[in-house]
Image 1 (cartoon, rainbow, N blue to C red):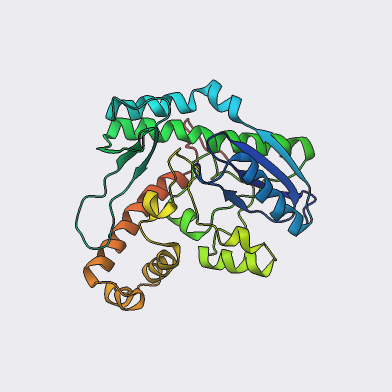
Image 2 (cartoon, rainbow, N blue to C red):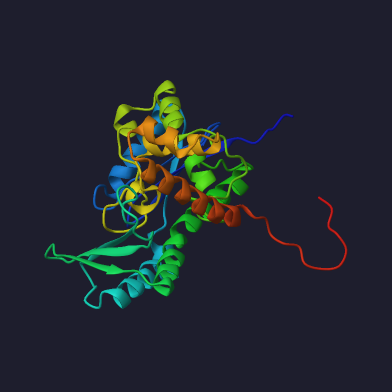
Length: 292
């Protein structure tokens, strides 16, 4: 079936966010970590990828939108409930405990850093966790809103960028970065995405950057926030789980204990249950049936 609509790229920055949009027939998304890069750096990296693929770029600054929505204020209010001294100049993130080598509950903690560099930790409660996540989700949904603005304006489709790890394990925001008209790499493991990027000529400067969440002001990678393993190992773990290999096989493959492999499988089970909810379509409520 033919399609006259073309697709696009989205590039996100850090705490002071901007979104770039490219008009192309492929899709990718790069997030630059706060504390490591500023918006100008992220914009430059976005332009570098766009130039390597021969596409045009436009930039959207979403800082004012996020501030008007109270994105950072609501998030910081939740941090302050856990750490009363949290205020201007502080930075924070939420992290999970390591999955290897222990049986600790998979509960989030907030790690905060004062302006003087002092680190403070506190266990995240259920209420504050939901508020933190709800507030930070403004960022992904605002970006997606602007992607669809440009798609509607240009009569284009929006391409989503989740890889298999993100799509299958629920590492996306519903109606945010999880929304798209087409998801061309959702069946590719992250390792394969990096291989594809190399084959397409994406510069090494981009491919060598550590995957980050681009969600919190304190520098954070995807491993400590969600996956608990480097993506190379997580790819193998998910492949092993999906193909029915026992924990003993995974343990031998990636060099961990059988107990750790079993914990990884249990964590995959839990994340896939979350993903099922995120993938659910809207329920139609009322008499009769609605045809597609």
